[in-house]
Length: 265
Image (cartoon, rainbow, N blue to C red; front, top):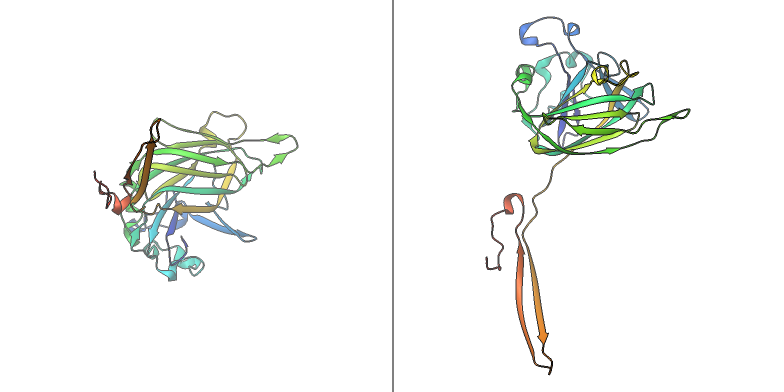
């Protein structure tokens, strides 16, 4: 399924183990994405309204989505057809985030693994084929927002580590928590998995979660900046001398050329 604004970036969400319709078969024999609406929040899960332990979802960042196949225009019959994953390009970013809409039980805890990738634009019938040929991208940093949920005196505070393979592992997630991450290079796809049954933590092997918000950001190039200074000094008997100089700060992106106009290197 494709979500997002037609005028900006969109996301394509698909189960971790989807049917490859190029090979035939019934879509229900593999992972199927489900969406639900609670108030003003749209959330999604896999094979139901939640992501169970052992399940996950690929989220691909795209541009130029065909609005006929973009939620809410997309209908159920259209969503069952891989060829309708219709977009023109991928959206590369260093930073993304998601919000846990709901855990079950509500206080959690859930353990989630995030793996980042770089892919190419492979719309339509090539989309599922392309899920296995991506380049892994290391996650370099993260931040967690704890939305406090209690059941009686029970409360969990999320914590996270980056494993030896450059993937982000978050434990103790509860309803409303937000996870943000930054990658070492740009990425345009992530795999978000529920690994609560494999985290070595007692008591959460059957805990589930769903995703209620997903955000992307892309740094804009900063132009060069020239800072002008004048310095005056005076000695003991009042003689003075002054001089002016400039400091240049090279810009980023297209402005990163090791040169600032008006500043001598």
